[in-house]
Length: 247
Image 1 (cartoon, one colour):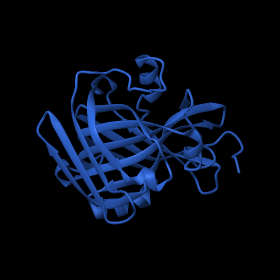
Image 2: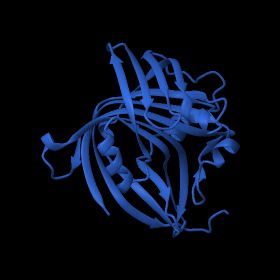
Image 3: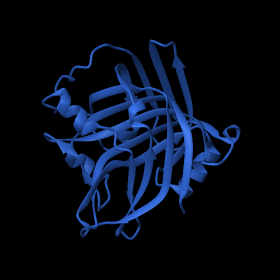
């Protein structure tokens, strides 16, 4: 089923962690390959507030507003014709609208769960707490504004330019069909000229979900705040994978 959805992301934070590729490989299905750089794969967490998500021609007033915390791994896939696509493989999503999550699980591979989400904002600092109703995904986060955009200590990147190139937010959610022959694609359409980020400093972060997956020694390599932006989501596109899958 194909859907065209629109909405506005009015709060958004992106956090990228370097992880051990050997630990991460077991989380990704055959047909997807980890994106790596200098011996690190990348675990991406987004914290966002979506305003009035709705089908494209539904009135604004009927849209659904919700918090979405998603845990993803950066991946690429090879398609038929030797074409390549990069994106994010969703491991789990927590949302504070149970009905929306139930519907979303029927339409996407974002793996929605219901959670209580609390968020505090005083314009210079932000606090988040996520309390899921199922699964081990309790989370807390504290951030503040910063002017620094330097590489984190021990960063796998040789330069800021390399970091930005590798971690650029690819607008595709990627998953593999049950038969393993097709790639399922959720595509984000946005005005790239309006996509702006500013660095934030993470004062503290506690994510129980990656620990439950066996991921150890997560190293924060990038944290940013995204300016409010209108989004359009195209759901339901499929492409044939272009090579045999690993067993």
